[in-house]
Length: 284
Image (spheres, rainbow, N blue to C red):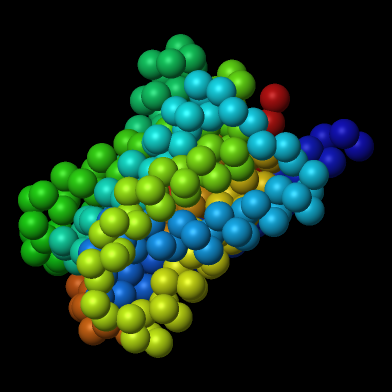
């Protein structure tokens, strides 16, 4: 009975992470639709995300926590979000997302380095296939982006791995780190916002959607998912995002996707699905 309950919770966690990935995938098209600088976008979207996450914490009766670990999580989340927005502005959405999604590899390496937790063979194989699939999916456009944007996206992947692992750190509080990161982002972005001249309805609709859906709901779903599944499982499941993100950008912004996308999609989704099925069937 207890095993069935654990399986049910694990499945629920996977669904939450999938919903999070769908919300995150709107980032590319929304960021490219806003004629503001990366710092401004990051700062202003944080206002709307802050309001949503703060409301969620009040409703679920979660208290705000403040300590060094929460501050570290806030800095990691701010760095991850700002570098990803910058990368999306500087290169194609495909480049930005594929390079950010080196993150599952970083999760496994960090779990090994910090906790001496040797990765299971299945996790290593799944990560290798996922990484190969993502590279394959964006092979045609990988060389099109600027080197600076590509490097920022890789750094975003490293900090994203730390965000995925945040709940496992002593004294950590995921939601408190998010709120703190939004305050940091707003502090950095507000001076830049004062210099923006385009305040069209489209820009404001996109920034509100970016804050509420892509930066608010996504983290609420991710937080609930991370309560139920491991960081490695979550990072592999969330690889739905790099499939949806450039597809939405292609539809609404005209960025093209190469023919190898189908092969990449099969590899990524197949690896994530097979890994989750394997984990469910081989629980300790």
